[in-house]
Image (cartoon, rainbow, N blue to C red; front, side):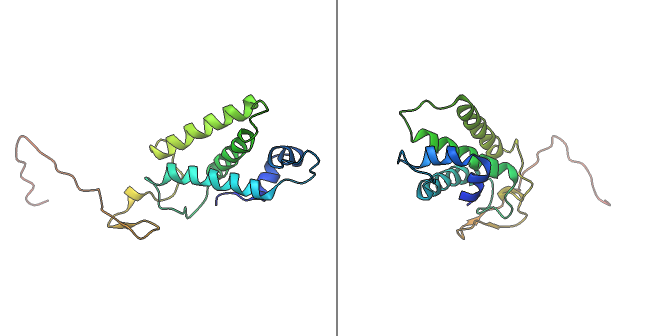
Length: 150
């Protein structure tokens, strides 16, 4: 998991967390089960985006990933309340988070940790599957160059 319920409570107001997580109109505390579900779904969405590029679970969780997880979890919490209008700021942040996750998956944004294709020999996923090295390539030339003595 990239975030905890404590991260959500620190990032967003207590009052907001109570309103979007607890179904009781008289509630004074957030529903921790609902918060945990939001966190789980956000982390799974992030893993789905990163799975093809990084070895999971991530060895070092950057603040970028933490922020994406917070944004995705908050969006899900608001989305579970269809009777209320989704705040524009929440929608915009969600769209930006998805865009950044796509950029990470495509290699346009880097997390600063080793990727699956950066392995020099044979890599291993967290599940134990072997990943073939993709660093071989063939070069063709129109004329032969004598490199004897180099």
